[in-house]
Length: 534
Ligand SMILES: Cc1cc2nc3c(=O)[nH]c(=O)nc-3n(C[C@H](O)[C@H](O)[C@H](O)COP(=O)(O)OP(=O)(O)OC[C@H]3O[C@@H](n4cnc5c(N)ncnc54)[C@H](O)[C@@H]3O)c2cc1C
Image (cartoon, rainbow, N blue to C red; front, side, top):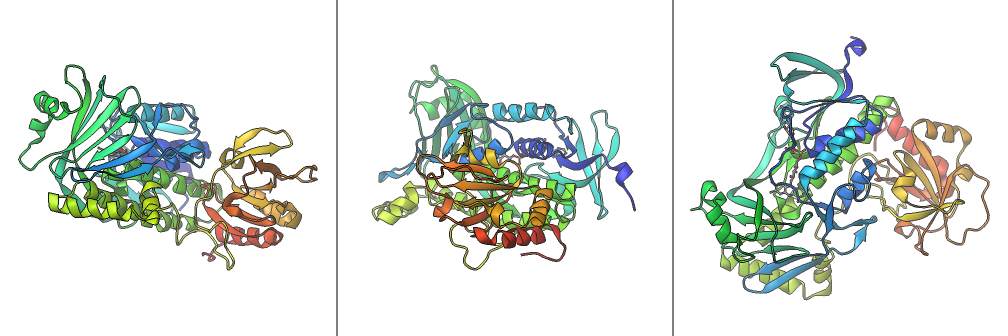
């Protein structure tokens, strides 16, 4: 059956929350025709996500967000306080990773407004608000989505793929009949965002008192946030009353001084979809995973989904890759999302121990672990957070892979372009492409012209990452760069090493530069030919 005349878009994105908005931006920047629908007309205004990590900021960089385009506050420390032991964890988050601060806080409505505004600059992205998904039919070639529009009329829209970014109660997930299992906490939490607090704070702190666990943090615009766990005897209405908030905040300031900006009461969940895809339909963001906010990773996890799925969908739609590569999305993303949920659950038991005895043991144990250098590093250097590394998926692990592990994240450096001397972030230089990078040697010297042509045809570039001693101009078409300030090569790779990096900066494969022909052939066969998967 030929549906091409009926197709309205390459991809339908269902849900214009933060994940849908970034997804539509990425797909739109890749040049796909995107239809994005949302049942609402407005950005969600109640307090939710407040912190991003360096991973999220790096993904937003690739979605075209410049530093400073939305307000952030860099967080130098995350502290945990015990009623018995005082400050028992102090995470040092003052560093940068991949040239982004380890943690920043932000104001979600401002961020979402920015992402929506950016969509209006993309003529290939069509936004329909007040439009609700009511059904999906996937015939194996095309997805038919039934939608109900503002004036209650019904329409069927068709696309090659559909992505459900429609949040925790995802209709897409329900239509696909994908199980969503895990744990729901029995406590409610009151979230309070306020301004004009006279006691300033520059960090994030968790007051891990079993009586009233309370995360507290600074945010842009002079804001501070508190999250208070409700006792079983307390109702939502009681908690949100002005008198109650006055009582709760009296420890920090008098309510006459403070301006309460917004409040909400939530129950937290730790839920994971059994699969992140079915046929031509995909889940991303809260539709695929919901995590309690103790690690500040819910939205960040959704953004990692976006980075992973968007390029694969673009490559398949353009005909640069076989459709089978899309199965690696769930294969790669689901195990990592599960690890993040487990991290948040573990932090939950540190932050909200159910009684003083448990608090004594958990906080005391962590305090003891931190007395050992390795234990201190685990907590203080935030090694507690699982790395964004895959054990299975779309990459080729060769024997002798030692410096940049395939399936791991390729770091971002500041680099100097040769010969013009311009200093640039390496991701910006690499752009939305596959990159074959040779360290200290030009991979083009080892790449057959026919392979180079095929490489370029599927969106591959070649970069010669020169050592700082480099002086004489090379006779080559590859991009030439060098690390700044005497930094060595990523992963401490030696001269003569090469790596292939995917458009989402996941390491695809590595090996000696002289084997560039082999590295590229392997990549081409895994990405483009049928029946050839890692
Ligand atoms: C208190 C709290 C604090 C948090 N703090 C952090 C944090 O610091 N850092 C962090 O990373 N994360 C945090 N999170 C998690 C984060 O807020 C969520 O992960 C994120 O907002 C989810 O975004 P989403 O786009 O996946 O879903 P949503 O924001 O829920 O968006 C879904 C969209 O889909 C639309 N929709 C739903 N059904 C349909 C349908 N049938 N048809 C059309 N449209 C539909 C909805 O209208 C909505 O616009 C926190 C969450 C809470 C509750």
